[in-house]
Amino acid sequence: MKIAVVGSINMDMTVLADRIPKKGETVAGSDLRYVPGGKGANQAVAASRLGADTAMYGCVGDDANGEMLLDNLRKQGVDGSKIKVVPGVPSGIAVITVADKDNVIVVVPGANGCVDTAYVDSIADDLRQADMVMLQHEIPQETIEYVIDLCDRADIPVVLNPAPARPVSQGTVNKVRWITPNETEAALIFGDRPIDEMLADYPDKLVITLGSDGTAASDGKAVLHIPARKSEVVDTTGAGDTFNAAFSVRCAAGDSLEDALRYANTAGGLATEKFGAQGGMPSDEDVRRAM
Ligand code: RIB
Image (cartoon, rainbow, N blue to C red; front, top):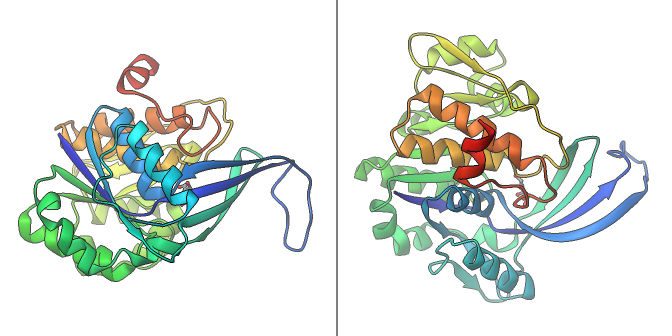
Protein backbone atom coordinates (compact mmCIF):
# COMPACT_ATOMS: atom_id res chain seq x y z
CA MET A 1 0.00 0.00 0.00
CA LYS A 2 1.39 3.39 -1.00
CA ILE A 3 0.77 6.47 1.14
CA ALA A 4 1.81 9.90 -0.17
CA VAL A 5 1.99 12.86 2.21
CA VAL A 6 2.19 16.39 0.84
CA GLY A 7 2.89 18.80 3.66
CA SER A 8 5.15 20.50 6.14
CA ILE A 9 8.55 19.48 7.46
CA ASN A 10 9.66 21.34 10.59
CA MET A 11 12.36 21.35 13.21
CA ASP A 12 10.57 21.47 16.56
CA MET A 13 12.24 23.56 19.28
CA THR A 14 10.49 22.10 22.27
CA VAL A 15 10.66 23.56 25.75
CA LEU A 16 9.50 21.53 28.73
CA ALA A 17 7.92 24.02 31.11
CA ASP A 18 6.35 23.89 34.57
CA ARG A 19 3.09 25.02 33.03
CA ILE A 20 1.75 26.78 29.92
CA PRO A 21 2.44 30.51 30.45
CA LYS A 22 -0.44 32.99 30.47
CA LYS A 23 -0.32 36.06 28.20
CA GLY A 24 2.52 38.35 29.33
CA GLU A 25 3.85 35.80 31.82
CA THR A 26 7.31 34.22 32.19
CA VAL A 27 7.55 30.67 33.52
CA ALA A 28 10.50 28.36 34.19
CA GLY A 29 11.45 25.64 31.73
CA SER A 30 13.46 22.52 32.49
CA ASP A 31 14.79 21.56 29.06
CA LEU A 32 15.05 22.66 25.43
CA ARG A 33 15.23 19.99 22.72
CA TYR A 34 15.43 20.08 18.93
CA VAL A 35 13.42 17.24 17.41
CA PRO A 36 11.99 16.57 13.93
CA GLY A 37 8.37 17.58 13.43
CA GLY A 38 5.93 19.25 11.07
CA LYS A 39 2.44 17.85 10.64
CA GLY A 40 3.24 16.47 7.20
CA ALA A 41 6.52 14.81 8.16
CA ASN A 42 4.99 13.51 11.39
CA GLN A 43 2.17 11.85 9.48
CA ALA A 44 4.65 10.33 7.02
CA VAL A 45 6.83 8.93 9.79
CA ALA A 46 3.79 7.53 11.63
CA ALA A 47 2.50 5.82 8.45
CA SER A 48 5.94 4.34 7.79
CA ARG A 49 6.25 3.01 11.36
CA LEU A 50 2.84 1.39 10.92
CA GLY A 51 4.20 -0.51 7.94
CA ALA A 52 2.99 1.54 4.95
CA ASP A 53 5.20 2.25 1.94
CA THR A 54 5.32 6.02 2.49
CA ALA A 55 6.64 8.97 0.51
CA MET A 56 6.90 12.54 1.77
CA TYR A 57 6.60 15.55 -0.55
CA GLY A 58 7.43 19.08 0.55
CA CYS A 59 10.29 21.57 0.88
CA VAL A 60 13.14 22.22 3.29
CA GLY A 61 15.73 24.99 3.28
CA ASP A 62 19.39 24.53 2.39
CA ASP A 63 20.40 24.78 6.04
CA ALA A 64 21.55 22.42 8.79
CA ASN A 65 17.96 21.83 9.93
CA GLY A 66 17.00 20.83 6.39
CA GLU A 67 19.79 18.25 6.28
CA MET A 68 18.82 16.82 9.66
CA LEU A 69 15.15 16.64 8.67
CA LEU A 70 15.92 14.78 5.43
CA ASP A 71 18.24 12.43 7.27
CA ASN A 72 15.55 11.72 9.85
CA LEU A 73 12.99 10.80 7.16
CA ARG A 74 15.51 8.43 5.57
CA LYS A 75 16.14 6.75 8.92
CA GLN A 76 12.41 6.39 9.47
CA GLY A 77 12.01 4.55 6.17
CA VAL A 78 10.15 7.40 4.45
CA ASP A 79 10.97 8.05 0.78
CA GLY A 80 11.94 11.73 0.75
CA SER A 81 13.76 11.63 -2.58
CA LYS A 82 11.42 14.20 -4.19
CA ILE A 83 11.59 16.71 -1.33
CA LYS A 84 12.85 20.02 -2.73
CA VAL A 85 15.76 21.79 -1.04
CA VAL A 86 15.10 25.51 -1.54
CA PRO A 87 18.19 27.74 -1.63
CA GLY A 88 18.31 30.80 0.60
CA VAL A 89 15.20 29.91 2.60
CA PRO A 90 15.22 28.53 6.16
CA SER A 91 13.58 25.22 6.95
CA GLY A 92 10.28 25.39 8.81
CA ILE A 93 10.48 25.77 12.58
CA ALA A 94 7.95 25.17 15.33
CA VAL A 95 8.40 26.65 18.79
CA ILE A 96 6.59 24.36 21.20
CA THR A 97 5.94 24.61 24.92
CA VAL A 98 5.01 21.30 26.57
CA ALA A 99 3.37 21.42 30.00
CA ASP A 100 0.23 20.32 31.85
CA LYS A 101 -0.09 17.24 29.55
CA ASP A 102 -0.70 19.64 26.67
CA ASN A 103 1.20 21.99 24.39
CA VAL A 104 1.15 25.35 22.61
CA ILE A 105 2.80 25.71 19.19
CA VAL A 106 3.94 28.64 17.04
CA VAL A 107 5.01 27.67 13.51
CA VAL A 108 7.32 29.70 11.27
CA PRO A 109 6.71 28.12 7.83
CA GLY A 110 9.99 28.99 6.06
CA ALA A 111 10.47 26.56 3.15
CA ASN A 112 7.01 25.03 3.71
CA GLY A 113 5.69 28.18 2.06
CA CYS A 114 7.53 27.15 -1.14
CA VAL A 115 5.37 24.04 -1.68
CA ASP A 116 3.62 25.54 -4.73
CA THR A 117 1.60 24.27 -7.67
CA ALA A 118 4.69 23.99 -9.91
CA TYR A 119 6.20 21.63 -7.33
CA VAL A 120 2.97 19.59 -7.31
CA ASP A 121 3.18 19.31 -11.11
CA SER A 122 6.66 17.81 -10.66
CA ILE A 123 5.32 15.05 -8.35
CA ALA A 124 1.94 14.56 -10.05
CA ASP A 125 2.77 11.12 -11.47
CA ASP A 126 3.77 9.87 -8.01
CA LEU A 127 0.54 11.16 -6.47
CA ARG A 128 -1.51 9.41 -9.15
CA GLN A 129 0.04 6.10 -8.08
CA ALA A 130 -0.75 6.47 -4.38
CA ASP A 131 -3.47 4.50 -2.63
CA MET A 132 -4.07 7.44 -0.29
CA VAL A 133 -2.84 11.05 -0.26
CA MET A 134 -2.62 12.88 3.06
CA LEU A 135 -2.75 16.68 3.44
CA GLN A 136 -2.68 19.15 6.33
CA HIS A 137 -2.87 22.95 6.61
CA GLU A 138 0.82 23.88 6.96
CA ILE A 139 1.48 24.54 3.26
CA PRO A 140 -0.21 27.20 1.07
CA GLN A 141 -3.99 26.80 0.67
CA GLU A 142 -3.74 27.13 -3.12
CA THR A 143 -1.41 24.11 -3.20
CA ILE A 144 -3.71 22.03 -1.01
CA GLU A 145 -6.64 22.72 -3.33
CA TYR A 146 -4.47 21.96 -6.37
CA VAL A 147 -3.49 18.55 -4.94
CA ILE A 148 -7.11 17.79 -4.07
CA ASP A 149 -8.24 18.64 -7.63
CA LEU A 150 -5.48 16.48 -9.10
CA CYS A 151 -6.44 13.55 -6.86
CA ASP A 152 -10.12 14.05 -7.58
CA ARG A 153 -9.48 13.82 -11.32
CA ALA A 154 -7.33 10.72 -10.83
CA ASP A 155 -9.77 9.12 -8.36
CA ILE A 156 -7.16 8.97 -5.59
CA PRO A 157 -8.66 9.22 -2.08
CA VAL A 158 -7.47 12.15 0.05
CA VAL A 159 -7.47 12.51 3.84
CA LEU A 160 -7.44 16.22 4.71
CA ASN A 161 -6.40 17.03 8.28
CA PRO A 162 -7.41 20.72 8.42
CA ALA A 163 -4.86 21.72 11.08
CA PRO A 164 -4.01 24.45 11.95
CA ALA A 165 -7.56 25.81 11.74
CA ARG A 166 -8.60 27.73 8.66
CA PRO A 167 -11.76 27.65 6.55
CA VAL A 168 -12.29 24.94 3.93
CA SER A 169 -14.67 25.47 0.99
CA GLN A 170 -17.67 23.21 0.43
CA GLY A 171 -16.16 22.17 -2.90
CA THR A 172 -13.02 20.96 -1.15
CA VAL A 173 -15.03 19.09 1.49
CA ASN A 174 -16.96 17.38 -1.31
CA LYS A 175 -13.79 16.26 -3.10
CA VAL A 176 -11.85 14.74 -0.20
CA ARG A 177 -12.55 11.18 0.97
CA TRP A 178 -12.14 12.07 4.65
CA ILE A 179 -11.76 15.33 6.58
CA THR A 180 -10.47 15.03 10.15
CA PRO A 181 -10.79 18.30 12.14
CA ASN A 182 -10.65 18.69 15.89
CA GLU A 183 -13.58 20.44 17.57
CA THR A 184 -12.26 23.98 16.97
CA GLU A 185 -11.46 23.28 13.33
CA ALA A 186 -14.83 21.59 12.84
CA ALA A 187 -16.70 24.64 14.21
CA LEU A 188 -14.79 26.91 11.81
CA ILE A 189 -15.51 24.72 8.79
CA PHE A 190 -19.01 23.38 9.54
CA GLY A 191 -20.43 26.08 11.82
CA ASP A 192 -20.65 26.29 15.58
CA ARG A 193 -23.29 23.63 16.23
CA PRO A 194 -23.60 20.27 17.99
CA ILE A 195 -21.05 17.71 16.82
CA ASP A 196 -23.62 14.98 16.24
CA GLU A 197 -25.49 17.31 13.87
CA MET A 198 -22.32 17.93 11.82
CA LEU A 199 -21.53 14.22 11.73
CA ALA A 200 -25.05 13.33 10.63
CA ASP A 201 -24.68 15.82 7.75
CA TYR A 202 -21.38 14.27 6.61
CA PRO A 203 -21.59 10.50 7.12
CA ASP A 204 -18.62 8.47 5.91
CA LYS A 205 -16.67 11.72 5.35
CA LEU A 206 -16.20 13.65 8.61
CA VAL A 207 -14.15 12.40 11.57
CA ILE A 208 -13.93 14.76 14.56
CA THR A 209 -11.07 14.24 16.98
CA LEU A 210 -11.91 15.08 20.61
CA GLY A 211 -8.55 14.78 22.38
CA SER A 212 -8.85 12.73 25.55
CA ASP A 213 -12.55 12.12 24.70
CA GLY A 214 -11.60 10.09 21.63
CA THR A 215 -13.15 10.51 18.20
CA ALA A 216 -16.56 10.67 16.61
CA ALA A 217 -17.84 9.93 13.10
CA SER A 218 -20.95 8.63 11.39
CA ASP A 219 -21.06 5.53 9.20
CA GLY A 220 -24.44 6.57 7.82
CA LYS A 221 -26.36 4.30 10.22
CA ALA A 222 -25.27 5.74 13.56
CA VAL A 223 -22.90 8.25 15.11
CA LEU A 224 -19.91 6.37 16.50
CA HIS A 225 -18.14 7.74 19.58
CA ILE A 226 -14.88 5.86 20.03
CA PRO A 227 -13.14 6.42 23.38
CA ALA A 228 -9.48 7.41 23.61
CA ARG A 229 -6.83 5.06 24.97
CA LYS A 230 -6.13 5.66 28.65
CA SER A 231 -2.58 6.90 28.32
CA GLU A 232 0.17 7.96 30.70
CA VAL A 233 0.66 11.27 28.89
CA VAL A 234 4.18 12.63 28.52
CA ASP A 235 3.79 14.81 25.41
CA THR A 236 0.71 15.19 23.21
CA THR A 237 2.67 16.73 20.30
CA GLY A 238 2.17 14.59 17.20
CA ALA A 239 -0.70 12.53 18.66
CA GLY A 240 -3.15 13.98 16.14
CA ASP A 241 -0.67 13.31 13.35
CA THR A 242 -0.30 9.70 14.45
CA PHE A 243 -4.08 9.35 14.58
CA ASN A 244 -4.38 10.70 11.03
CA ALA A 245 -1.67 8.43 9.68
CA ALA A 246 -3.09 5.35 11.38
CA PHE A 247 -6.61 6.15 10.20
CA SER A 248 -5.38 6.68 6.62
CA VAL A 249 -3.34 3.49 6.59
CA ARG A 250 -6.20 1.37 7.89
CA CYS A 251 -8.77 2.99 5.54
CA ALA A 252 -6.41 2.35 2.61
CA ALA A 253 -6.14 -1.26 3.83
CA GLY A 254 -9.93 -1.60 3.63
CA ASP A 255 -10.91 -1.59 7.33
CA SER A 256 -14.42 -0.53 8.34
CA LEU A 257 -14.77 3.00 9.70
CA GLU A 258 -15.18 1.71 13.26
CA ASP A 259 -12.15 -0.60 13.06
CA ALA A 260 -9.99 2.15 11.54
CA LEU A 261 -11.03 4.59 14.29
CA ARG A 262 -10.33 2.12 17.10
CA TYR A 263 -6.89 1.36 15.68
CA ALA A 264 -6.10 5.06 15.09
CA ASN A 265 -7.23 6.04 18.61
CA THR A 266 -4.89 3.45 20.08
CA ALA A 267 -2.00 4.62 17.88
CA GLY A 268 -2.63 8.28 18.79
CA GLY A 269 -2.79 7.41 22.49
CA LEU A 270 0.46 5.47 22.37
CA ALA A 271 2.14 8.45 20.68
CA THR A 272 1.48 10.62 23.75
CA GLU A 273 3.43 8.29 26.03
CA LYS A 274 6.88 9.44 24.92
CA PHE A 275 8.55 12.79 24.35
CA GLY A 276 8.61 14.53 20.95
CA ALA A 277 6.25 14.62 17.99
CA GLN A 278 7.73 11.44 16.52
CA GLY A 279 9.28 9.89 19.64
CA GLY A 280 6.27 7.80 20.68
CA MET A 281 4.89 6.82 17.29
CA PRO A 282 4.06 3.10 17.46
CA SER A 283 4.60 0.22 15.05
CA ASP A 284 1.66 -1.86 13.82
CA GLU A 285 2.72 -4.55 16.30
CA ASP A 286 2.70 -2.02 19.18
CA VAL A 287 -0.84 -0.93 18.27
CA ARG A 288 -2.21 -4.45 17.97
CA ARG A 289 -0.61 -5.47 21.26
CA ALA A 290 -2.10 -2.41 23.00
CA MET A 291 -5.53 -3.12 21.58
O1 RIB B 1 1.21 18.40 15.06
C1 RIB B 1 2.41 18.67 15.71
C2 RIB B 1 3.32 19.48 14.82
O2 RIB B 1 2.75 20.74 14.62
C3 RIB B 1 4.68 19.75 15.41
O3 RIB B 1 5.60 18.73 15.12
C4 RIB B 1 5.04 21.09 14.84
O4 RIB B 1 6.09 21.05 13.91
C5 RIB B 1 3.76 21.63 14.21
O5 RIB B 1 3.80 21.59 12.84
